[in-house]
Amino acid sequence: MSGSLPSGCPSDHEPAATNSPEEATTTTTTSIPEGPSQPPFQIPLSWPSNSSVTLDWIQNLISSFDWSSKNLPPSELPSVLPVSVFDALVLTASKILHKEPNCVRIDDCNENSRVVVVGDVHGQLHDVMFLLQDAGFPCEDRFFVFNGDYVDRGAWGLENFLLLLAWKVFLPQRVFLLRGNHESKYCTSVYGFEKEVLAKYGDKGKHVYRKCLGCFEGLPLASVIAGRVYTAHGGLFRSESITPSKRSKGKKNRRIILNSETKPLCLGSLEELSKARRSVLDPPWEGQNLIPGDVLWSDPTMKSGLSPNTERGIGLLWGPDCTEDFLKKFELKLIIRSHEGPDAREKRPGLGGMDEGYTIDHVVPSGKLITLFSAPDYPQFQATEERYKNKGAYIVLKPPCFDDPEFLSFEAITPRPAV
Image 1 (cartoon, rainbow, N blue to C red):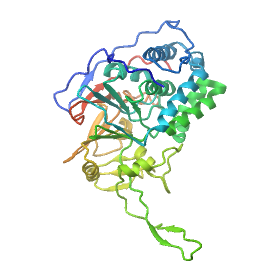
Image 2: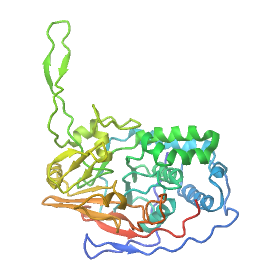
Image 3: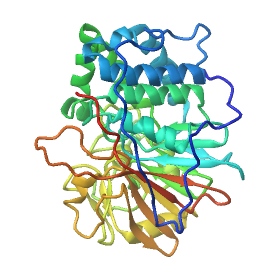
């Protein structure tokens, strides 16, 4: 459930305008002061008695997570956020998310609206807190669309995800949380989130982890903003239309036999996307129901056409011609996707690096394809001391058409609390 929309949009400043849509403003961040030994607020947090999340409750949640990350070992997180509060938040958010369509449409924008689009954040809680302050908190005139990958590779994936769920509960028609490929059982078991949850919640860790997985299944796959901008974590997807090839003989058994011959890949439609079954822990890479895996795992390339993404073993590679076809067919101007950080782009000849937190990958007659990455100095966990020192970025879309992106790049918050 949500409280009433705040009439104003709390923010330290309005993001500065850029001279062109392809020029980013860089925000200089300040260091985080050391936190006090005692919290300046009451903990543990309690769930609102009327189940109505307020802006004050969210601000207390932010302060609690910030303080605990600097002053408590991970195993003491339940003393700040008890399992009962976790359960109430996740249950309330899950009910909202599971009712949303696969592709959410954000059409109630007006001349006063701004839409903030955010890419991968990967457990980097303090950078997310900075981003929310820098862009301005969600409110009646400020929408947020997050492109997924809230967890893994960082120390605070759980707090990250729960904070964004709280915003979703508070403002369900202003905050939209899409699914990333890391919101899956496979990725979270390999890249850190499962171990993080078990370390923080101990004997209740398996319960907390299962509840998170169930919530992941409810996350929508894509969004269309103002009828002009398509966003998704990975990007485009194949058509899965199946036609019967013949009917079996006999009146008693008129079962349809499907044609099992391999068909050439072709782009899917928004209607097909709307019918895909997204409630799966791990989207399949073969067989049927391949659209969710495509949306979460696919990547652009400079080579024309549509082909299997053999590097990842799931999803597709699509070229500029596919971007043009998709934009033109659905009367769109922009595709904003995420999924690739500086490490991935090192292996992608012909595509730009992720030093500034974004790249413009395809420029075609009907519009552009953008990759957006919002985790600066990524990844937090890596085997060597050498770091990418990349900036993160977010995009602001403004009226009248919401299709002329303003890029805001930012550096990582320093120092990060000890992990």
